[in-house]
Amino acid sequence: MSTSNAGTIKTLLRLLPYARKALPRLILGIFAAIGAHMFALAIPQMLQDLVNSLVAGGISALYPAVGLILLLGTLEAGFVLLRRWLVLTPGTFVEASMRNSLYEKLQDLPVAFHDRWPSGQLLSRAVSDLGLLRRWLSFGLVLFTGNLITIIVGLVILFTFNFWLGLIFFVATIPIWIAGFLFEGKYKTVARLSQDQSGDLATRVEEAVHGVRVLKSFGRGSFAAAQFSDDASELRSTEMRKARTVANIWLYLILIPEVAVGLSMLAGVWLVAQGEVSVGTLVAFFATAMVLRWPTESLGFLLSFTLEAKTATERFFEVMDSVNEINDPADPKQVAEPRGLLEFENVEFRYPDAAPDAPALLRGVNLRIEPGESVALIGLTGCGKSTMTALTTRLHEVTSGSIKIDGVDIRDLTRGELRTLIAMAFEDATLFSSSVRDNVLLGNPNGTDADLTQALEIAQAQFAYELPQGLDTAIGEEGLSLSGGQRQRLALARAVAAKPKILVLDDPLSALDVDTEALVEDALRHVLKETTALIVAHRPSTVMLADKVALLEDGRITAFGTHQELLKTSAHYRYVITSLDEEQREREVNI
Image (cartoon, rainbow, N blue to C red):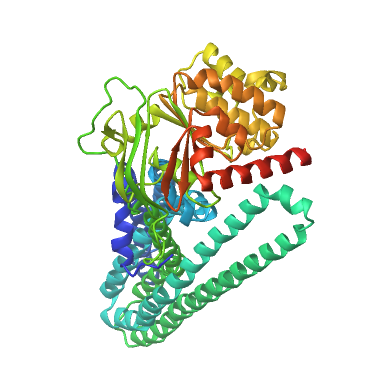
């Protein structure tokens, strides 16, 4: 992940569309913060007259001045409370809005994006970075702006007390601004590195949690722990670099004001001795300098906070700025009366990150599947069968050529409509942390109980009724509480329940035992009579399920026909089907 060189203000201004509704309260919060500081700065003004009156023997002015100072202090506290009330809520709405936008973007981006990005990096952006931005908007932005304005106003007030004292104090504090400028250059790099490493660490945790069964079965828990420890140590080293960088700026922010006060005091005492400055003025001058102490010292923390917010903003927009090349057409078409005719016409596909001189995975694929016809797609491992099925729902986009449904190019359909016409079941069955009912009806949320029952019967997933809460049983994260075969059957039921015109099955029966597979195939035959089907086959029994067979070889469909026809005419088909026979026999022996 590259670090942007855009200015801090320019980067943070990109948050404006999300923060627009919260701006009124945030601005009022800034004014409340400034108001609190102004009341604090007004107190030294009272001290000036009070001390001068006391020095002149005017004791009568003491009680009104004390009362007024008490009032100013109360108003300061009230404005602090008002500031907290104003800024507490808006940041949460901004965070929620940004998180929703990020989630929608992640759902919209193509599979190729998710293949490139580690899930932990996306998770850290959705949780840690947006939480940091919420805190910065509610706290960092308000206090940084309020404190900076307070420092400027306070310096002006110091000059009004005495020009030379104000000049001495101002010149003595110039190194603070130089140190702040240098700090920004150093800190933004280490802050970005820290946040990226946090994302990598989150990825490591997620992989270990999801793969805990594998790690335990191979006794590699200690190996995973060592990898995690190495990544955590790198993050710790980076955090220590951050801490040292912040500590250096704190040194300047604490030491320099003290030096400025000391120099101003020497000059002030001399001016009082010369009679050019009154005692009250000198007291008010240093009381004002003390009021400015917290805003000045806070600059280090608030500056580092702001730079971290800049980095979090960059990381957020790295995702939001990602270009989705698989979009809905500007003028979408519709399939008026879907029949389920599926056609591949001169389809070529190569992965975007493939080497320029590497041949395309699919080259000139032509295939026509008539409505209600089922076709088994077979070929050697790695020939592109799964990729070809993924192209049908635009999980990937064809490089050239076209895929049509009832004569309409799928790129002319909205993705929503396309994915109501086609349903997929994958070999790697993914389920969600929800009930069996919700998982099966995911593609048909308005489905009836009859639809649900029929889909479970076809997929031979009646085991769902025997779960603790039946169909309302929450099956846990990714369905890992179920066996591989059970997950596949529920995933197949999900595809069937969607009632698509075209059903694409990417070897969804690989984890089933022989008897269950036979029952599922028998039930599927009834479904496939009315549904167009493209089935990736890795076993002869799956091939027999289809009306015809397409042989994928060297990126092309080199043979098409019935199983018996291809056995007679294609030597490569006989080789592939023999390989499938051997794999199935070995599997049956293992079972």
